[in-house]
Length: 454
Image (cartoon, rainbow, N blue to C red; front, side, top):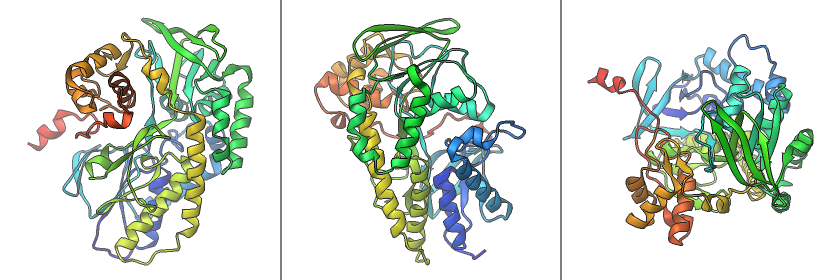
């Protein structure tokens, strides 16, 4: 392995992080890779524990070959000592070109000259009456339980929200033998059709999605409104909803999974000095980069922490970020024109998807005062609106007054809904409401890790 003076650190070992590492290794660099997972693969290609009896085909469906290829590639790089890999390690802070991470052996600092952030995405959640109840999970958590442990989190399941993950998780649960009572999509069929021109940039994926939808049959309902979850001390017992024609329906269940596509995981990008722009299509703040993923001096972004483009897009973004890193180090780089063309096509598809399955802004703005918005702190929509009236229409001021975004998730699950409520109350745009400032630690951390250092 060629010795290179500059130290490169990659955060995340999903498709983007793996492809970035592959390109760096091919250039003679041994990157440090910090990953929260037990093994590499990320969320989309999450690996089950040893001895798990379900095959890759059963776990990943048509993506099984890609998943196995990425797993094999990464395992080989680790075995050949081409990368320095730290699994089950969470980066908590970033300052002065140093990452502060919690590893299985305690807190550790990782200095870097160049940083590639491939931090992925989390569920994008909207407040629904009763969503704070036990037995209500995000779609991502539902999928993790199925992939990692072969567990369906309920005996009679309702999934609600919008986006491709809604259909994917539903079909995966059905294939595993779980009972699905209903799949409730807040996007109407007419709205879904508006995104079709963009989505036809990848017709194969559109066809695959339609085939999945067909497997759901009459379980799937589009244009759903007025969601409300009723629960007792054991968890959900039923969900109330209105169909596209306004008729009220009630579906019995003992578990609910919710999610409206994804939101980019950007806390570390903010701490690393990246700038952000509000993206109206995605209805969220996204990091500002050039076409290769350059975001700040020595900082590169890749994968869904940059743009929600799916696993294929994440792989390409990982290669482009590594390409930019190598170029800035004045090292030889391969031609990236083909990857840039792919990215442009993936971007057209993704924006079509965002238009077809939009963030339910109007539903959020109509949230009743007694509905919990911040599950971590138990703050209701009414309390948030009072904070706007008292302190002004700016996200960080409302946070300081109403505590929305101060919990363990650091606003990951309530920031977007909170901004909608602030904007609606004040009669301003969501962009004008602003975004919450990042704060370290970006994950809950045990005090003992710092006490031992002291």
